[in-house]
Length: 160
Image (tube, rainbow, N blue to C red):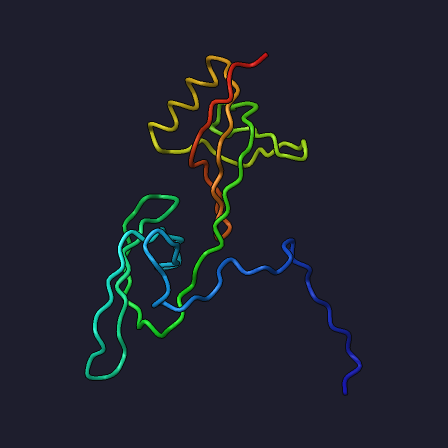
């Protein structure tokens, strides 16, 4: 055929998809869905009857899991929707830098320094106050579609 060599750039990830398909009619409240390219938690689902042209439609109302914005979408129930892979991981808080980044301890003993403090006021003040008091804090980090954000906080007692 041809004598030229093909060079492929290697990507850092293993090629795993950020989403997976799921039939719209099977997505339920409290599940996850991608609306307007944003990962959302479904807060409301309503299904309309089959119309003159055949498809029953699902009306989804979702809250963006990272910025809290409300998004809506209407999809025929037989069609596939994208569902994000959502993971929650707990890390121990080591340090908070002046520029708003946190230093976290992973399970294998490495540090993770690429996360910002959350923007949500209540959670932000809990983290800062607890850290200021010298408590041992564990933060839950939610990740989906290449984004990560601190979403919860656990106090595991005072430092020794």
